[in-house]
Image 1 (tube, rainbow, N blue to C red):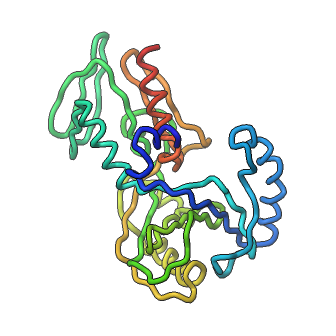
Image 2: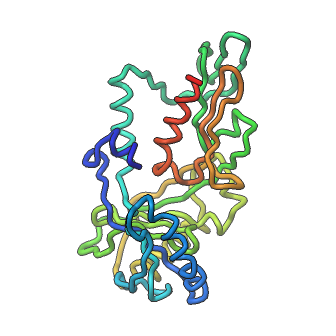
Image 3: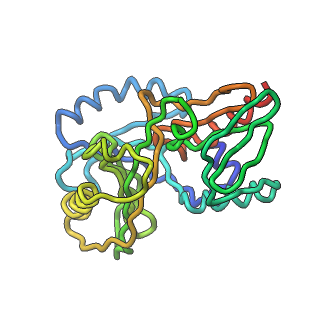
Length: 278
């Protein structure tokens, strides 16, 4: 995150440090989590010089959750749309060409270069970096599973008091404020198999549950309307560790970001670029 912030500048990506909140659905699960708090704070103390995790009461008056939150005092949030815009502006000023709406279907490597076959053109290059994350299995044999994340955002809500980033149901749901709106996503645990897909889109089972949680847990006493719905494809695997490595003489990859792309994407890119000089 420090690398991302230094590259793009906080104000350009609307960086805010409003803390993160883990919401538990039972006393048992809360106590199980909180029993590890001191050990984890001790591990993180040399990095942050303060305790990262603390506990607070249910100040946002959510329903159907435990009456205390586990708080990450250092968690922040950014506007990912602004982040994408700033990144594109930065690389284009450096002379990088971006070709949109082209699908790379395969590549053929020989001793000197690589032929890239797309759905529109074929061309050659001397080095190939694959950073398609959730779509990596279409080109590589690395163990990266696509995981669709469905998301919605409300219309502006008058006098919205919710501020920060929030995880619910062991992290399978995520919500945050964007100004006076609530962005809410997750629920793939309701239908894991269907969400292991390369296809964008929404399903009734997940969208209905997102709306239900908004009504009964997050905004139980507030009327709201949904303005937009969309989805994204994450790249996950059997461990929370990105795959950054050289695959052959000319091919490299940085994939399987495990839903942590904003947090670790800049470092993965830096490590990937460094491989070419080794």
